[in-house]
Image 1 (cartoon, rainbow, N blue to C red):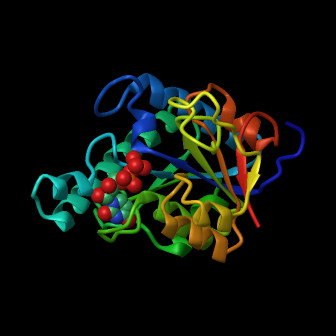
Image 2: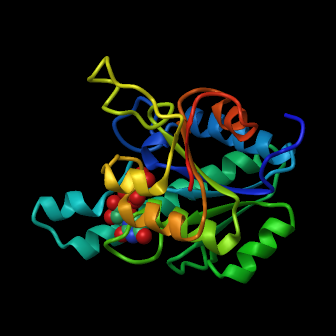
Length: 238
Ligand code: UDP
């Protein structure tokens, strides 16, 4: 990569991305590989923020579907994102790069409490900045957390790592005729109900003029490739 296209970006990592082939929890080898890619991007001069999900451990909707209290379930989900974020921090720091974890839910013994000023300062000080706790509110998702933090931090784009290398016209794992979109607008994603990020996240990205670049988190090296404008992805912008 010659000149990075973005000065500061937000990588959205789902909990499932950290799970690897396991049915639950964190696969340390996968976390290590993804951390190495974050470090590579950082060393190319891109300020990398990461919003970490928690679906590999807990999801509030699942609790509610089983008759439990949704709000409690959502707090369990937010706590799960903290566990994942700490794992990512350790893996990044093993490369000798500083990483800071900011949580939307205060737990000062474990990590820093999110404030816009402190998190911006962490970027300026050269750290990889990891955001956990989603938005800090039940009934939201970490996708919305990603759009929110990207807007607050002035990120040039959201890189959404998914199971496949972009947004398809149908599920490519089930439908062989499915084709990948090169580009879409935020409005098209919303109008066609495409399953990229939840509608609140896409609307927030649209309203703040933030492109969303969807790529495969499972493909080794894809993050840096896509950052450089190469590789397979779908760009959602207006
Ligand atoms: N969550 C929440 N508010 C937020 C972010 C997350 O309540 O702002 C909860 C919610 O229960 C969600 C869980 O945390 O299911 C894990 O987050 P998410 O499903 O977004 O994780 P991912 O799918 O990215 O792994």
